Length: 326
Image (cartoon, rainbow, N blue to C red; front, side, top):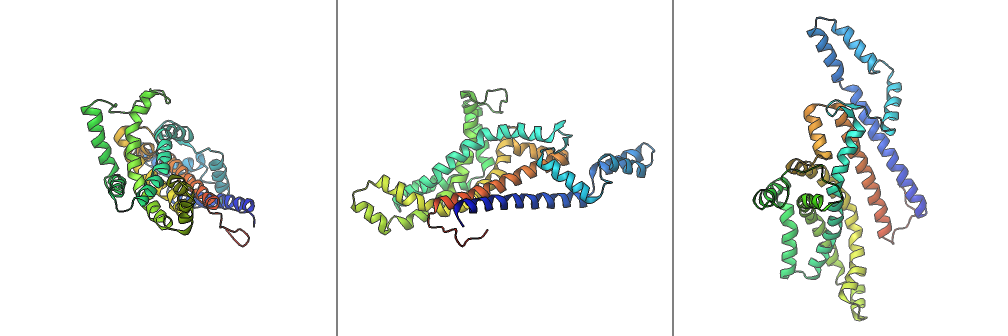
């Protein structure tokens, strides 16, 4: 099996996984009581009406009286055509609310991801190249300082210092600032710094351990004997094999931090992003918006794992696809 066919099969398998997730989600929704139906029954009882008639009318209005397979097909069509319903909390379509929130989340998550992917392996390789020296201890201490301290607490401390005392950054995120402007970069630098310092620790540790196993390998000794500069030797002969095992854990670590820390950072800094939107939807019990946020996070995880598999196949030339299955 060639590389192209293997990639096509992985993409197809990702589509199957997303379909399974959507099917399980529909099953849970179908088994759970609908809050709109319960609210209609309660409202009818308070107004002296017939709760049973109100329930039947609400079920018919929302299509809950249709056969299960018809509802399932309608649900699939709605999910894959981005018709995710109406958000009572935001008074707008769910997809519109999510896209608005994603635009703010992307402003700090994109530079955070780029810096993490670049700095984590680089610090790890640098630490391995200077193992057991003060440079190694300094790099390890810097990486694990952010990993050990809670992100929300670190964010509050930095906001207190740079926002309240020094007044270098705004205390509350200003949405009226243009996206590509110096003012927006200034108010996002602290959230990005908090997330980067909290995520490079684990990546740095893996890359340090992996690169330490390669720095005394035969090919490194050969490269040094031929007069190759240390920078070129580490960049070409250590960094690439280090990225192979790192690629199997990088996406999972970033997704875990994205799902958890982004909410805390957005609440601390007042960023109206995806994490804060999901939190507010849970508080407001907006079922459609919570479901839409969950589906979006799920699709991001599926795409992230797909990219992880593809990156692994590109980085490791030793992989043979002749006898590989999914």
